Length: 441
Image 1 (tube, one colour):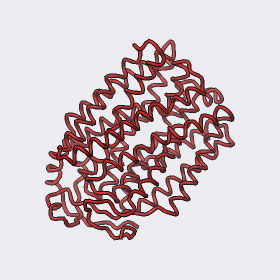
Image 2: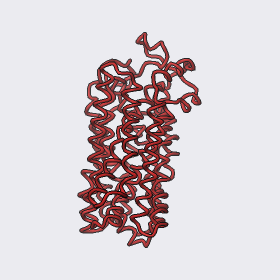
Image 3: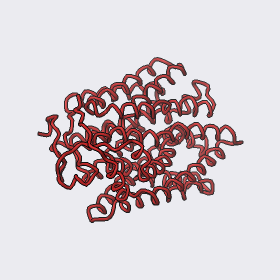
Image 4: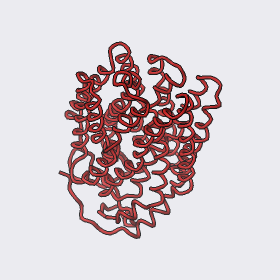
């Protein structure tokens, strides 16, 4: 039964209740990204109230969230096979909610930094654990659409939350925006306690024995997985795209105000544009990739070349923001360039899971997400220093977009050339050995 804890062999159809769990995890990611963007949305009021320079803001607040996020993702990922993912999701969401609430009563920089670091620790494993949880409900051939839906929790988190959060920031203060997010997080915890369940699908082995249809447990030495060319390549492309995403979370609203001259109210409302465009790109990309695969197109083409090409295209657009003659055109080109490659966030977990034995899946997803997430540590800091170093904020921001464009082009090309799941699957299968299964608590 789907609600039992006994594993069942993967089939060609999702388990009963899979789409309901997908909806709950979608809301989980929605709240997660609303929690992430609130600091960037309130960047100007926070800098004014706490007397921070752009470099201070980028270093102390922009990067503090990402500081221990990568480490916690790997640690929890390696432990994830020993407990049910539904318990991990519950604990993470509860911590997110609780660390927002001190901002209602505190204006201390130290408290804000401490809360963002704790939030980052609890956030680090969120994407790999959520992905692992949903993959226990869907077979590999059906994972493109649910992965895209889960990824869109981030876009909807921004699209739906930004107008309300921005209204709270403008009409009341940035403190109330944090408090509202804490209440929303507690509401999701109540929903998950009532309806959250653990999936029971078990993937076939990476080796040739998968053709027999039996469920087996296997292990591939970590060095072969971590250095697998397809996994390294998809992480390179993902790193470049996450650099842009981290800038959007931290600096986009400030750029609209300082660089393009918009008011806080209008800049806050415009902050949803990259997420709307990215949502469309991810959903279309997920549908196209899954449709291509269903028609027999090799994974290298439908997941590697396709996603890598969109990342490269975005990198070709972003550096030319400086050449646009009006603020509106600058905004349009920046939104298009940073969003069009978002399909890579769907492809990354699918590629990792395609090549990784199920007992190692959560840990490998965590390693990949941590590697990609390192961009979140560097991007806000680099942009802050560039804005501080140039004579005007506009020049600093545009130089930062050139750096982003170079990263996107390099990452996209690496993805197109080296994401080759069919070849790497055969290579990894030669290193697979039998392993004892671990039953989650």
